[in-house]
Length: 300
Image (cartoon, rainbow, N blue to C red):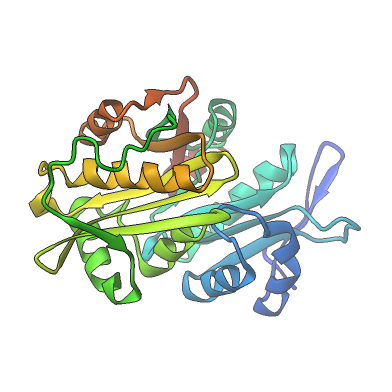
């Protein structure tokens, strides 16, 4: 255990924040289990090793486990630190966030970003010096009994199950389809592709080339379109619609009766596709917040 900041008393709270050493990481797994990004302990440990994962916690002992925050690189970006998990409320939560952000900036990060937050929680972070990085819309589709696997297909592609040998092609097309902030690395792709109890990973091929892919999953009656990527050179050719129809059919077969997807508010192409496919925008958006060294300093 290494204390990284002197104990600070605010109200009736004495808050001493410590950094967990690598030998302590496994002790935090029970509290992290079930996090969307860490479906199993191997993914958790791999992330801590490969993405400069760090845990800051309130020292002093607790029978139920101390409040803590888990942060690490945003995907493969060493210049952006992301908040992946937090346990704590009130002044404790604020203190953990500020310590983690300050430590990240001292280590060379330019930005500290949150996971998607509801509006009330986003307002909370705004009071701590954060600002909105992007607004995420949630969309939902109620699934009909009849299959949609063949309706309206126009793309001349073969849709197959993903194989590990497609990894480099999928990451390459993903980088062409999304900007630097949103593109995936191999670890994040695996985490997304295993995030539900039942998962589906499909690839679209044309003349032997992987030109698109879709990742979906089902938790009981709820289905999720986790990721849809089409190579930049092949967008507008109906591949996204073909993959979406097939993933809908696949998730229906897994027992899903509703399907959810999310995308950025300004992603007009994705929103147009999803609305064409019968998705409707849900009322409560999500917000990814970000903080810079200047914003953290000004909020003191």
